[in-house]
Image (tube, rainbow, N blue to C red):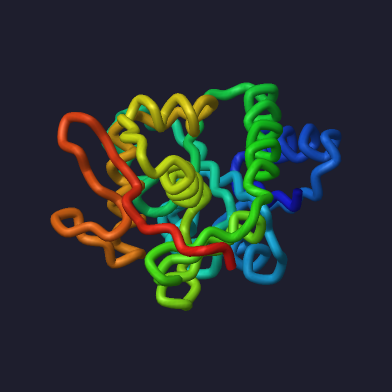
Length: 229
């Protein structure tokens, strides 16, 4: 994978870069927000590891920019441990969150898990509600009314997971165990992801076409599957 590390602490940046290169990843390094934006906009980046406290541009603003251009997997690094802050970061479009201090082995294990899970999505396109929603898992692409929409990695994972099992109601804990086994996400983050998905699909909670809330139980995909494309 082509990985962009954004971290102003040179020792941490260099250490991550060294170990990721040993794992045969193509690594780019940025030590501030401006360098990060230049590298991100001029390369096809598969995954970003970014500190949230940078000297010139806040990590949250970088996430917003990255989400306007694609679905690159984004891991945030932060010393903050409160749940509200983590939920805010996920709501902006981050895919994962790691609390400082962390071990390099933890990062390597997480990346191997990400690669493994990305490969699981190599399957046929899925179409629902007379092609109102089309999911291309292999390309990590989603069309709504035949127009592309940008979903984050975990938003896409949740959408595929729900749509692959349309008759099942998934609780927050079910989704956490299935999709976030090596993440520091909390169960309340699931609600933020579902809210983001609904917004992008113009799917209203009170009159849903795709994701129905069963209060006290969880979420269910209710889209009507079309014949194969």
